[in-house]
Length: 373
Ligand SMILES: NC(=O)c1ccc[n+]([C@@H]2O[C@H](COP(=O)([O-])OP(=O)(O)OC[C@H]3O[C@@H](n4cnc5c(N)ncnc54)[C@H](OP(=O)(O)O)[C@@H]3O)[C@@H](O)[C@H]2O)c1
Image 1 (tube, rainbow, N blue to C red):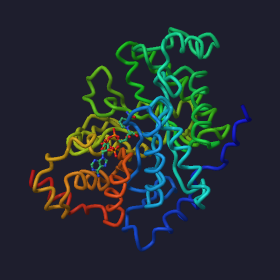
Image 2 (cartoon, protein in one colour):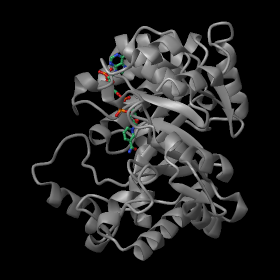
Image 3 (cartoon, protein in one colour):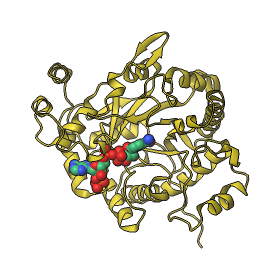
Image 4 (cartoon, rainbow, N blue to C red):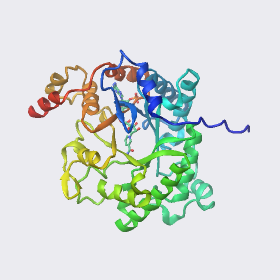
């Protein structure tokens, strides 16, 4: 075996992302690119969750991601466990092609996650034996570190996963590294122990950031920030930011939260389940107060919104297609930086890129839509 290829240095920067946005001047509508933490990021991002762990899906994703970037999308979202590490490698192949074609590393925000145990490329005949050999026997985690039979946030495990992700992606610095569905542990781990695990995870991520292997970190969640505050897997954003502050001081790097948000799951905007400084508010407001950037996942409810978008929404947005309306809703919601859409088919990438040229809905359109509900 030859030596591994060198990792692409750099990370998404203010200047790089501005250059990216400038490539689309005249083609991208105003507000398609928005300034978040000094970076110009696209209102639509490409996700890589769904699909079989096989080579034809690898190729589709690689082509789809390249097409998406060439069309004005500079937010890429993946996770080490998506398609057994194959999605990260598809992102890596797409980045390699894009760099060869003249895009700079500094133009593209590359985000990944870890937490769920995952095999490497294929399902091993005996997964327990694989995890024992690969991790437990090397002291990377212990059986006690595992929750729900599948989830781990132990420091050495996170370091290990970051190293694997950097290699899969071919980049030296991950722009945004998320703890993946950390609330999975709350079914099993008492809250005090959970918070202790979050603190050691944040300490690890602050060290990784100081070493330049990740730039910022956060949490990608499903229920945590959407649920009622009495739910067993609920998380308070104020408390999580407080833990990051305790670990990293005022310069902590806990800057991003990802959560599902779509026409059928509007809780981030509509449910006052957070409290900041004693005031009750929605997640969108809490994130604004606490300086956290929100990224929406499952923007199309995995395409289950087809046939379920009302005439009022079509009329308000002036768009005919159900999924176009669904995506327009998410990318236009004040407080949502980027709407992630999973797309491995070129025709879906092309369809969704149509919105790049259409301005996000105005506050007035939003008001009209809610008034008519
Ligand atoms: N907890 C978490 O961290 C979490 C959870 C869920 C999602 N995510 C992230 O968010 C991303 C988006 O969520 P998702 O992929 O679950 O769901 P999604 O974006 O709501 O929907 C993706 C599905 O919609 C299809 N699609 C996309 N554009 C379409 C179009 N114009 N017409 C018809 N169908 C279209 C895709 O098909 P093709 O793929 O065949 O093109 C795919 O099957 C994920 O990929 C992942 O990166 C994170």
